[in-house]
Amino acid sequence: MWVLLSSRLRTWLMLAVAVPVLRAVLRRASASADRRDPTSTASRALRTAESGLSRLDRRQRRRDRRQL
Image (cartoon, helix red, strand yellow):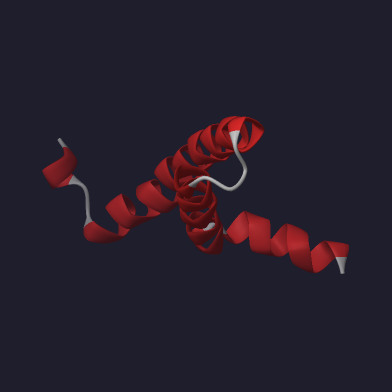
């Protein structure tokens, strides 16, 4: 079924659904790791991954512009 979808539709689905879900999971894992030891390598890696995904999330950028 996935093969039958156009390339643009697959890209849109990933950006609209998968990225925000993955970002939320990484945010929760990062918060949990921060509570245990904020200076750990795992905590920093989770924060970096979450911030990288936030760049892909257009909605977040729109929210940031509105707050300025």
